Each structure stands twice: as C-alpha cells, then as structure tokens.
Length: 329
Image (cartoon, rainbow, N blue to C red; front, side, top):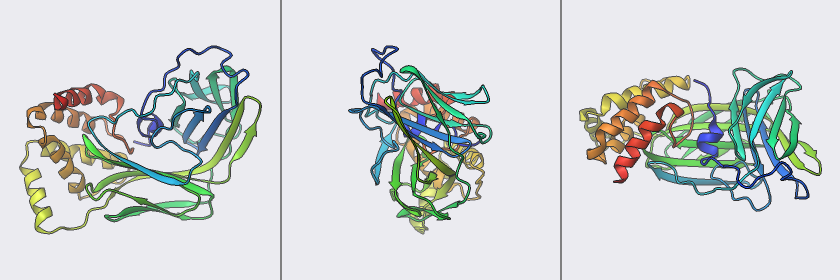
C-alpha cells in the first residue's frame, strides 16, 4: 500500500481543530505562511500564523533534526487553533482529495497530478488557491542504514531534503525528523530499535507566491519511502532474543503483521526478526494486557500501511485504544 495520509499520522500528530473562527479570520492580520511539498502523488501542506506552536516533524525553515521516543500513543505536544476548515486538491474542476480541519494536511493521490492542479485552502475568508508546481523528476533516491543512522542518497541536484523515520514496534518506539539544505542526508537513529520506516522529500527551490493574505512556498519535490533494518549481529544475545520471541504466544501475530507491513512498502524481506522481536517484547512488557495487544497487532496485520508512525491506521484505532487503556491501568 502506498504512502498514506502521513501528515495526519506522523508529521501532524494532533488534530488541530478550529475554534472561535469566522469567515473573515484572515482580514487585517499577518499573511498566512503556507509550505507545500509537491511530489506528484504525495503532497504535504503546512500552514502557520505568527505565534503558532511547532508540531513534531513539521516542515519548517530551520535546518535541524529532532527526535522523540514513545510508548503507547504519542503525546500531543502542540495544539493550535486554526480557521482552516478544509484543504483540497482540485484538477480540471474535480476534487481529487480533501483533508479534515487543521493546519496540516497530507495526501497520497492514486496517480500524479497534472499541470494546472490547484491546492485550495478553505475556511479563512475567501478560499486561497495555489497552483501546484510540476513534481521534481530529475533525481533518484535510495536509502541505506546501520546501527547509528539512516542514509538518504540522492543521484542528482536538489536544494534540500525532509526525512522522517520511525520504528515499527507497534506499542513503543523512536521517531526522528530531519530537514537539510543539502542531499544526501544522514539521519540519526536509536540503537534500541532495529526496524524503521523512512520517507523523504527531496526538493528544489520553491515557487513563491506573496499576497496580502498568504506567503506561500511551493517546493517541486521527489518522494521515496521504504523499510530498513539497522540491526547488527550480536551473536548469542540476539539469538537469545529471537528464541524468546519465538516462544511467545504473540510471535505468530507479530510475524504476520511485520510481513504485511514490509509487503505494503514493496520491500518484503526474508528476515522479519528485527521487526518481530521488538513487537513481541512490547507486548510481553504488559502480561495482563496480552489479549488486547494481540488484537491490536492482528488488526495491524489485516490493515497494513507503509509509513513512519506511532499512531494506528484508522481501521485499528479502537484496538489501539483498548491496548493503551489496559497498559496504562
């Protein structure tokens, strides 16, 4: 399954609802800043007003890396009200995709948009319309990894990159987001985990649109996503961890979920242990909640996604909530 609504689940970890908004919210105020990563089918949009807090993993001006570890659900560390009721991708009068309310949106269209396709931001006075630039098609992206980092290599010229990576341990893990002014990019990872989803936008200098209502930067981008193992062979220690995982009642469910996830990324591998071992370990830490955890993992196996995320797919939100509630009791 291709990249899915990544901004909602990882880049925008909280649903940013509109409060005390009116049709003329933008009138007489500083222009709204809009940044768009436009890669054909994947599109991410970030909007800001002066004073808005920064969400973890948000595309921004600063060249830096940020990371966090999580257990259960990711803490919502940034809640900013927004008048943005909806963002839409419109092509030849047809709506290709639309978002929920909030400052951020991410889309994965069935196919790349064509010339003249528009982004429409609705809810803040008159709709804001921005024509998307042609995607970047002059680079090839590839990933590699070791225990210290994930490398994004770029064959071709670019102005910068935006990379996110997250573990796939189902109930705990580590996430990192890096923005660079160059390519290739070197992304630090936690040596406590060995199985990651990594996704990257590589972009050119933006198309700039400035009016009294919006300051927009639209970045022609290329996109790639894949799964990676950072494990090295620790000999007897790793063998013991594998043996313990295989003896667990959770192992079959975890192995199936890991196989589904890697297949969803078109990156199936014969070695599922870097994913299955931490998956089992996360469930075994709460022995009184194994039934809830197994139901959550089985749902993940039946509804695989290819993404770097600590939050569940929509289909598995109920199972995730049951597991989290039990683990926190």
